[in-house]
Image 1 (cartoon, rainbow, N blue to C red):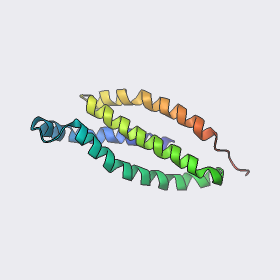
Image 2 (cartoon, one colour; image 1 turned 90 degrees about the vertical axis):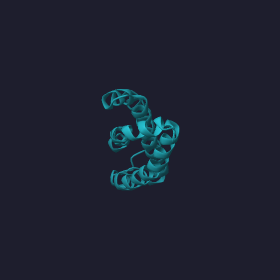
Image 3 (cartoon, one colour; image 1 turned 45 degrees about the vertical axis):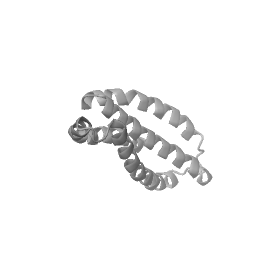
Length: 128
């Protein structure tokens, strides 16, 4: 689950480089925050989904989890990563600085991790 934490913080760091561009584009009325948010989210969800699938193939079967419950695990992992990235991007857009975006983003992620952990505990470990 640690790998699922990185997308939100990565999106905050990437947005810092784009903050100036977004301000110029919105000031000139070319597009708004919503269009920027939707385009970044749509582009990143494909990459995040593929990386979650590759990562889960590596860790799931090597850890001895039940093979018939792989679909549930990959669903939880992809959902967590996509939601994490989306919340990170929202935190980056609404906050004026990198540090504040991290502070806004961290508490919901820990709450999501606690909820996701309960779902993963239902995936029984197969006999060794």
